[in-house]
Image 1 (tube, rainbow, N blue to C red):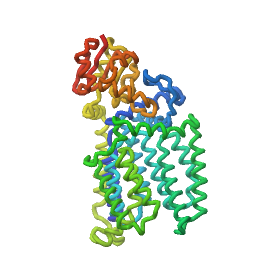
Image 2 (cartoon, helix red, strand yellow):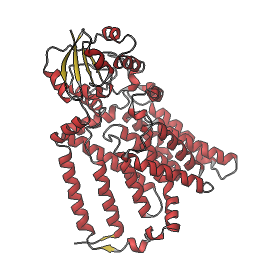
Image 3 (cartoon, one colour):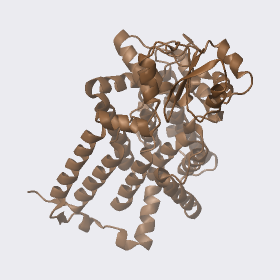
Image 4 (cartoon, rainbow, N blue to C red):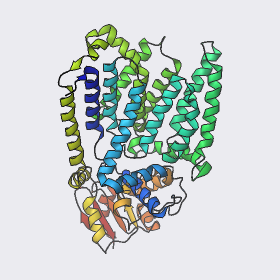
Length: 475
């Protein structure tokens, strides 16, 4: 049996540990289901979605469905392998992003592999099977392009063309490009060795990227997506736009990288390039305000910090620094260990996405599984539904005969969020607004203020109750 070197063994074991973290079922994320349903509709009709198909509050209202191509990829994966397909897709996306990040890092092997593990830890907080994963991949690619300053800038329009059809988070890419333009202009203005030719190319290719963004089924409406998305950041009940819980174990990698970034900015302030400092400070502080950005910071920070952390370990912890001669030594049991671990990862994948496990995850995540089954078989409930916001995506997929009141497409609903908030908290004419929208069926959590109010309201009947959900029918 061939022997692997210590370097090959460490890389292989790290890759397997990463797979254990990232190759996991996606069922705990409610929004994955409206993405999946959208992809199925486009596959069946051979047309992209233009108007709202899923709600009774905004039927037909135009929404640039900026994730359309990413949703088709999801639907194809699901049709091929069911939940295994979504798990595999998320694992592939995660491994691509982590591999790109690793390739862009420099310094000692041990530090680079440790940074990969920290990033993989944080990636478990997000359903990487969603089109959102493309935002992470493309952001990492653009960071690498502007840091390496090579001829690869010509790929910016190609990236933006793909990004504009896969996911609407392309604004993050232009933030990276804008930071690079600013940093280079500062260097030129203050005589710090700026390259005017490279700056000109960066600006021109970035402008070409803006043009490429309009090459999508929705044309120039795609350019409005970031502005519509920003309105969600002020809403207090969309978790991914709230500040992260830094005590959550899945945020450990982010906290470590945030602290490492702060220390490098303080002690290496004379050496660290302006662009690196801008990216660390900008995305780091943004991540403290918005959970959605935590993952982006966690994946770009290792690229920026790896050389400085490697120098630190080389100077102050030499025993942890592995020189090349040690890394190239053969390891007797390296390959058998990797094979055994690899078989374990395959077993976890097979058992993790089986139907019983998916149902168990949904029940632990407080999905209204029983309530949906009740409504699917009941003839007493009217189709005009008021639903809990978080369940909207799941209901779109699982309760197709009931158009939802609201779901995770925040850029569509805008002011409807405030209507939803007034009703679910039983404030400000909530009964009148239920009547205004023709609501005859209500599906919410038992501990909501609306559920408490309905319990004593003579106009409503409790039709179904479980630990996570109640169904009320208008009398």
